[in-house]
Length: 142
Image (cartoon, rainbow, N blue to C red; front, side):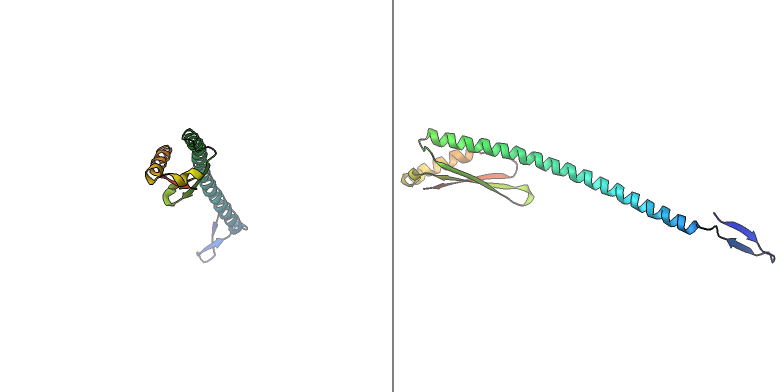
C-alpha cells in the first residue's frame, strides 16, 4: 500500500512502505508454484488414465492370445499332429496395429501337399480372435 504526502512546494511525493516489494515477489513465486502444481497434477491424472486403458487392453490381448494358442494346439491334436510345436509372436506397428505370427513345427508338415498346407494355414488363421488392427500369419515348418 502506498501513501501519498504532499511536500512544501505542493508537489506529490511517494513514500514507500518497507517490505512491499519483497511481499509481492513472494506472492508471485507462490502463485507460479501453485499454477505449476495444478498443471502437473492434471497431466499426471490424464497420463494415468491413458496408461490404465493401455494396460487393460494389453491384459485383454494377452488372455485372448493364450486362448488362441490353446485352440491351435487342440486343432493340431485333432488333425493327428501330436506334440506339434506352436510359437506365437507378435509385432506392434504404428497406430497400435499387431501382426501375429504363428509358427507350427511338426515333421509331418514336410510330407503334406501345398493344398493340404494351405487348408491348415487357412483354418488356423480363421481361428484368430477379432481385434482392431490385428492380423495373423501362419507358417508351417518341419
